[in-house]
Image (cartoon, rainbow, N blue to C red; front, top):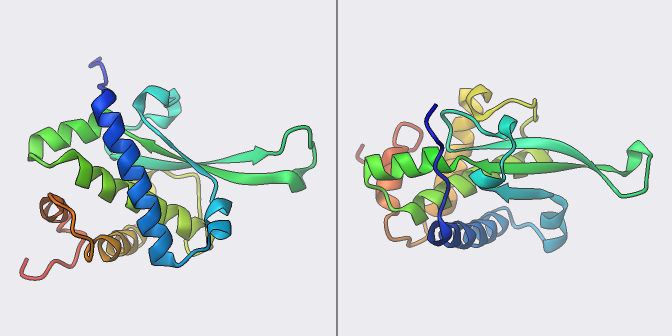
Length: 176
C-alpha cells in the first residue's frame, strides 16, 4: 500500500491561513454574528491527525458529524453536534501537482466548500446523514459549489481562476 503524504510545516502554515480567511469569508457571506458562528462547532483536521475511518479515497475533504457532550453531564440534553472537516492531504497534494494549481487558493476553495456544508447542516438546509462527500446528492453538491463560487468570486485571490476552471463542471463560469 502506498504511504499517504501529509502536509509539511510550510504547507500547514498555508492551511492555517486558508482556514482563517475561509472562516471570515463564510461568516461574512452568511452574515452570522460571532455568537451564531461559534454555535457551529467544528474542527479542521489534516492527514496526520485523522483516525483511520476519517481517511477516504477520492474527495479532497469530508465533513464528519460527531456528538459531543459537556463534561460531567450525563443527560442527553447537554449534547451538541461537532463537525470535523477532514482534509485529505494526500489527495490535495497530488491534484495540486498534477493540475499545477497553487495550494493556497485550492485550500481556500475546499475549506469554504466544507464550511458551507456545515452552515447548511446547522441551518437545516441540508440534512446530515453520516454520509461521505461522495454520497451527498448531486443537487446539494451543486448548491454548495455555487455558494462557494459566490463567496469567492468577488475576492481577488491570486491563482483562483485555475481552481474555478478545475471545478468548471460544477460552476457557472461565463464563456465556458
